[in-house]
Length: 253
Image (cartoon, rainbow, N blue to C red; front, side, top):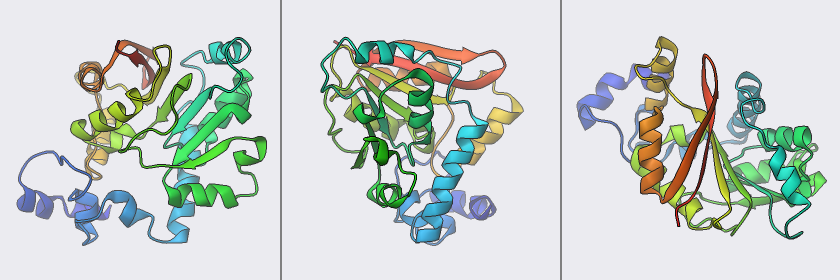
């Protein structure tokens, strides 16, 4: 709530425009550290990190991980392709709750999966007694604004990360993933796909994301940022009456 209380001062200082970068967003401005990004401010101490990881698990309970998209083809591919090919890379996946749910429900071996997040998050996951690393999942600290280190995986999955960022930064993040994809790799994006015009609920969530410099996006905006990142063959998977969905796309040849 702190950042919302400072909206007037923020827009007086920066003008009536969407934040464009990772720093100088309403959240960091409100906490007196505008030159830092959201994660540098929000994950400054151990308890904040633990609260963040718990909140990601709670969000998974509110927003369905399974049911919108059929992941069963990944399990089938595990038996027909190279045994050393990574099957599922969870980019910015927090504790790995969503990936574990998908793998357990569809029979995808976790030992061929990779969990990626910031070093401060991955170190916390590694120390957890119920970490998915105990089932062979590789833990990898990354900055997803930089080169994607896992090349040619079958699936790259990113869930509720991109709504934290501006369109320019989303293109940057997606381009890093696209450059590491093989021609048959698929990128699966779990996000809200806002109706146009938006419902009161989705408009409220959009305002919520503004505080961290992000936004919710309708289909056409998703298509635009994906095209700019070098991705195509876009398909939207949704369920009636629910803005949550999966966006499936491939690297453009």
